[in-house]
Image 1: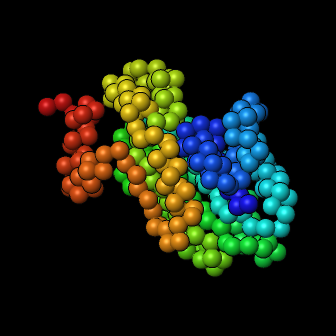
Image 2: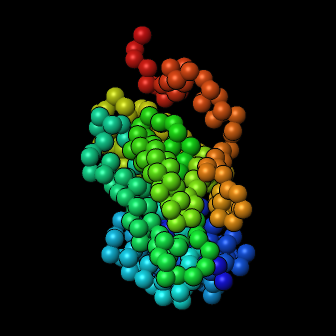
Image 3: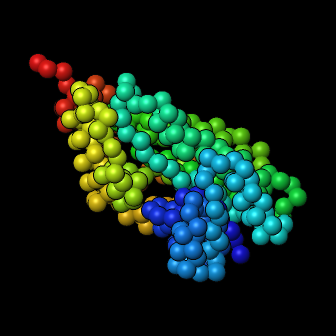
Length: 283
């Protein structure tokens, strides 16, 4: 049975991908941070789902989980690693606490590095394992190619994932292990739905406060109207199983809008975004 590790499997893209792969006959090892989520997913997905309890920023816990997966594989290679776990931190660069920026990078960038180092050998860089070489799927975002105001930390983390993946793909050619980027647009996941819980009161007296309120409403809107996570799961499955996968799959709910954003002059896009958010200086 082919086995895949998915980080951040409790909800959203991770949950949808775990369900799809289990339904297609894979054994899925899915990371969660809470025992309650581990128990719930086990009930939902059955015997072919194995929960792994760790936070992607906890190197010791990740390495312990990697040893658990190695034992379960019984000398065979891991078919795939899906680096999906992530968070979104909002705030203007001038006023966002360095600790918040650090937390964003720890989860979205250092986390995938830790998990790749932990599970990477199981994909076939360890010559003692038998079987075909596996693949690494990195979950980026359309924000990995575009910087959104007041979401600088999140955009920076996804830009970092794009560069990391490009370099890693070329490094892993030594072992025949492919690295593929999935870059979704807005997706109906809790990462956006949690926007209502974000406390922006610290910016009450900031000139950025009205724009932050607009951004929060927009994030809530994305959580309601974005792509279904099942659509992203299909792309991940394709990346894992296609004979000739692309190096990057971008899946956006409004491809034409993203095409226009990438085709228009940057200064023009700046003004459009600034006008919508109220970030233009007084006339």
